[in-house]
Length: 53
Image (cartoon, rainbow, N blue to C red; front, top):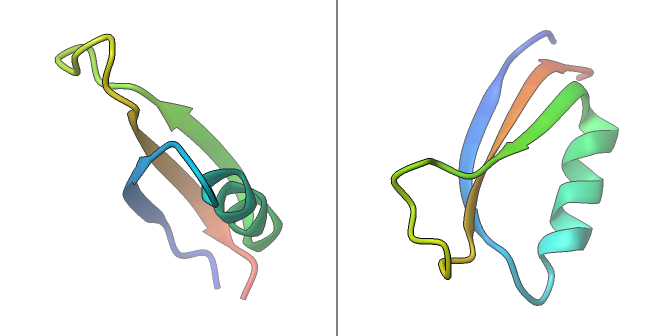
């Protein structure tokens, strides 16, 4: 319990379901796109804190 998780995700088919699952398992989840990422790129990072176990 209370663990953290960071993962790179490519937005597309299945990514919304994955985000929903992560949100049910952690207290707080934020989605961030790196400033160095190309504007067209569909990559984002999920930062999740407080694993509910």
